[in-house]
Image 1: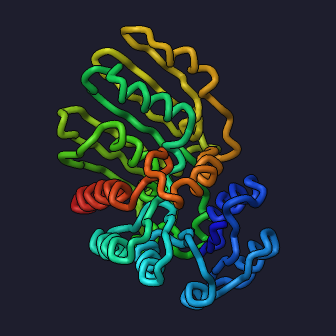
Image 2: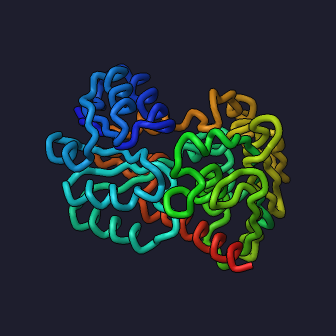
Length: 337
């Protein structure tokens, strides 16, 4: 039995709680939850039977945890990861690992290495069935040389979404729509495209009263020569419209769309393959833009904590750092204009 603690009991924490509840006990147990707002911690405690805390340091000191899950604002992730590592506790961080400070992320990575604990990041969209099939096709070489990868995140976040939590949309704790809403899509583009050589970006704040951007376009140049493009807006009227990725190569084109990269819309390759018979079963209807990957992740967690490193759910902080590196470069380029 692995004992888990969650710090940060806001919106995304419920995806973790629901994934744990779906397992019906078994090898994972939520024993503690923490939030500086007592009512939020109490709510999770009432749902799960976990002990509620308002002080993260106290939770780490009092509980014998095997894993701490970071669901706090992004700007706090590095400091919270560092504390967990120093306490000898494995870490599972929500996206992204940090906002604009790669050095703080690196300090947490080094601390985890020294403590011999895992430092993982939630990359639930990598576990979407359509994405798994796309990755399988990529690794099988079906695209040939990749030419271009395009991702669109056209979602709706009204002003009251930002007003209900003062850290949202701030540079220190959150960043804008690229860092918050589209971090998984940035990861997806670089995961498919490989090493990034250069980053260019244009951003604007057009319709929301926030520090950071609500609309942005990013262009990536991969070392392979391929071009990547990420377009993001939280001003889509009247609701979430699209969360997609399109991969184009010399021998194939695939577009996965829906609101959370959940539907295979285009699947064309020069040569047939046995995996083509799985196209229809790969698409699914997610309950939210978060998709269904958290449930898959938690099913894999016991094996990962036991030492299995072959799972797609095993994504280290070093891998997750690549996303933050792109975010930092995009913001640096956009803000210098």
